[in-house]
Amino acid sequence: MSGPAGQLRGRAARLVRLMPSGPSNAARTPFVLLIVLLLGGGLITLLLLNSALNEGSFRLSELKKRTTDLTDEEQALQRDVDGRSEPDALERRARELGMVPGGSPAFLGPDGTVRGVPSQVVAPAQPRKPAAPPPVVTASPSHSVSPAPSGSASAPPATKPSTSAAQPSTPAHQSSTSPGR
Image (cartoon, rainbow, N blue to C red; front, side):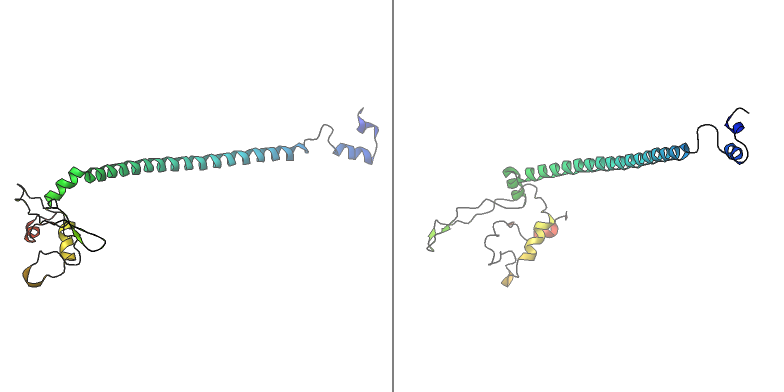
């Protein structure tokens, strides 16, 4: 017994035998567990962050696609409105509804004098193929016209002189024979 335990006797020798003779492994175990837990927690946090970013990316791509679709639809509707707002298209549609260009107008001066001589416009012969007016136009005069006295059902109301030029000059019986669009 040449070690330190061989030189000690009695109680001290027994205590030395209980102590480990090499470097201590017990002090490294909590440190290793702490490092493993930190690395594991970091990896789990990165995984959750990555999945949240991917979900946001998918949502963003869906919203971009929807925005593109809505922009395309808006442009198509704007082209449709622009096409129907052209003067030629408005004139064609007005003629289909039976409207005619107005005659020479008369103007009222600020002092109440009438300038110019108004003339009445006579509707030309019916077009070759009369088009059926849309339901909005045919329903609008019947709701806005008040009952006319003594059989003049197609006369415009006295309270709305400016709308008489916008209403079709065709008889009221034409709307009952239309196929109804």
